[in-house]
Image (cartoon, rainbow, N blue to C red; front, side):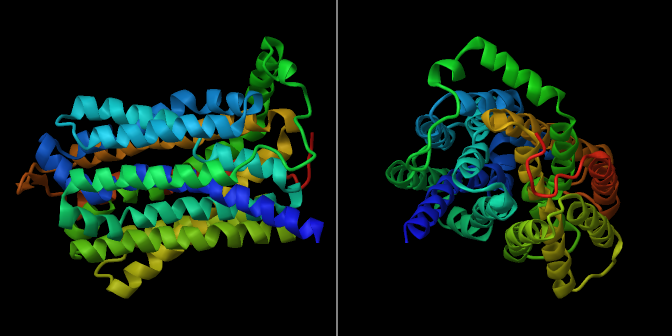
Length: 421
């Protein structure tokens, strides 16, 4: 009975912590719902929208590694309280801003706070669950985050259409206050009777800091598997920002249909994350599910790019399957947990996540730039109109990325679901 209560507490702590990742994902993917409004209000094109959305990713990339180091050194709950309020206040501030430059700064700060979005629940999970459950738990944490992406599509589009994008962002900030209260009630740093393996004095020493940095940087597992997740993650970022434009302009869907397709993409990822994590745990193998899923994802994105005159059912199916199989990227997190010493797991997550979010910071703006590079200059109602050739030219970034990611996993070391350090 005591073990059951302990397990229930573990799930409660980690799933409520995952709500921070959920809230961060709302901030990452809300551009689909407000993109057209921002283009009109801020008088910018696809390059400008891509650059504005990249502010979040640049904040992430700058702070992800320090975030991991901080989570190994200080209270996870106290850090969560601080960064949650940063996101709430910056989201509220954004609703009152009128230009691209100040909005970029607000999103940059959200990006810094968002650096802790996945790391906080993963760090708690590494303390509350054994290694052989980490792929499943990681998958469920990511599923909670992806639900945030779903909320920021059709539901947010509906809210924006009814109250305007500025009021919708104020409702967004209000949601954050509610989640903050729940987190402070439920979350605690360690299970009862468990403490940090090293003393607080040791954890906050300079020698431990440099040790953490060195071990995280020289561990090639963090680099190889982080690169895989960075590259398999790209469709979720690209279609979260440019998906509505692509589906409306090329597939001739309505705004609500296009938003639902992006929801389907994230719904596939929500189901795939725990499913493929469970498969990996049961197989006691990390690499095979990642490689097979990468190859299937490659075939799916090529189908999306070159299958002409797709029915709406075919579009739903391809995007669902793309979300499902690219979610194999969640297996990276247990690999990193298994490939780094317990006292520096947060630093390992930070190193891997820096690579992961670099894709958003560098490659999402690159997608917008490639789109404009191939663009003929047509504008309708202040919104750039791109052709199928324009999108295919930019989308080739995805299959190339998948191939590189698959090669990275092939080079990496198999952990078989056990600590290898």
